[in-house]
Amino acid sequence: MMNCDMSRFLAYSFDFAGAQMLGARENQQDFYAFVPPDQFEGRAVLCVLADGMGGYEGGEIASECAVRAFVSVFLKDLVPEPDKLPEALSAANEAVGDARLVSEKVRNMGTTLCAAYICGNFLHYISVGDSLIFLYRRGKLHRINRIHTIGQDLSEKLVEGRITLEEFDAEPQKNCLTSALVGEPLLHVDYRSGIFMEPGDMILLSSDGILTIGKESLADCCRQCTPLSPAIQDVRNILDTVREAGRATQDNTSVALIKVLEMSSHRDTGRETLIIKRSHQD
Image 1 (cartoon, helix red, strand yellow):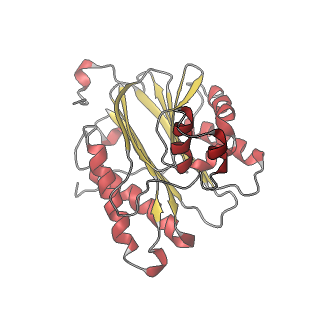
Image 2: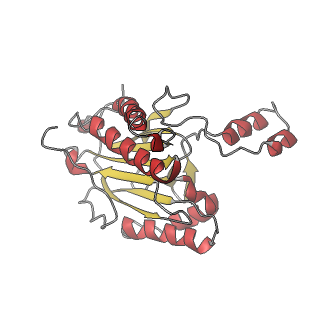
Image 3: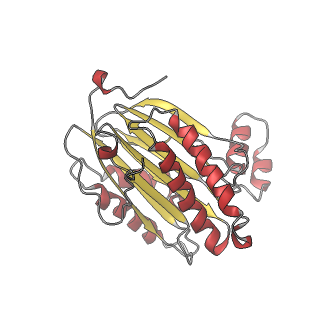
């Protein structure tokens, strides 16, 4: 099992921040939060992001409920091992299921969720749904998590030769989720542990509203980031690029960025970034 023993590894520091835009929606159904290094004895950083769904109130409630439940369970250990991620995900799913029973108005709500945990030199992540986790390294942007949509399933079948391009194009519901947090058993979970991190790496979590600008435009935004540019400015620049695309039906978009730096104190994250710290009861 991969652990967070810092005695064997160089400790990195992190600059991290997040920001959101409403887009064409009437309310913000995304929710994200960071748990900073000072909550992990300086050894780690956690980011959790969720994109809710289920009507005017439902999506908003589901995403926040999931993130807070995830963080609450994760923080029960002082410096959690990576295998705490699935346990926290299960708690988040259960919390959404319980919240669905409170009112008929939110009976159909649910949410995606993705979480990135950098401890020591290693990244560990878990995700459900179509929210995205990217690794930017040495000028190249890579999506590292598998999304859970009909379109993703069909794309894989197309590559394998199991369906034709005509069959792929004929599917009208490519964006429909095949797995989400709704309180039921999770059909698909993407969990990976032990990705070695290097100074200069960036981890970007985002709701699917970011897809408006495409991977190459997002990569160009990442190339403008430097070790000296504040993460809060970097995420604002990314959202500015989404706004400039001018999509009439633009979805909520949330962007959360972790920059891996040589050992030094991390910077102020800015007002927009929600920081969750341990309660006195933990």
